[in-house]
Length: 115
Image 1 (cartoon, rainbow, N blue to C red):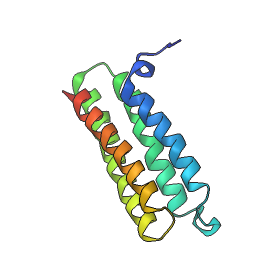
Image 2: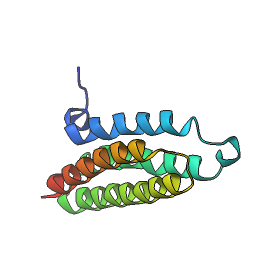
Image 3: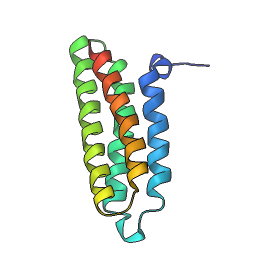
Image 4: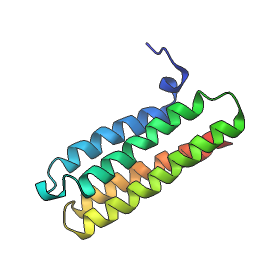
């Protein structure tokens, strides 16, 4: 049962699930990264769904577009953190590809929602 309109959006649902995936993935990162890349990628990933939810509740198209732009930017920040995590050996090539494919789908959905 959905109470708020954003909960019905596939892009929000995908972003929420992706956030959970990232939390699981980063749980195996080195403990010395807890306040480094682990925290950064979790925050940027969480921001994707958060800004979709906030943006779709705004009254004007301009406000909605602004929050969707922030959501997209958070997705790009997340991608950067994923690339760095792969480079540091914290995620495998397979994990990276799976996450990147999910993120690309979310980005396309955000762009479609802005139209």
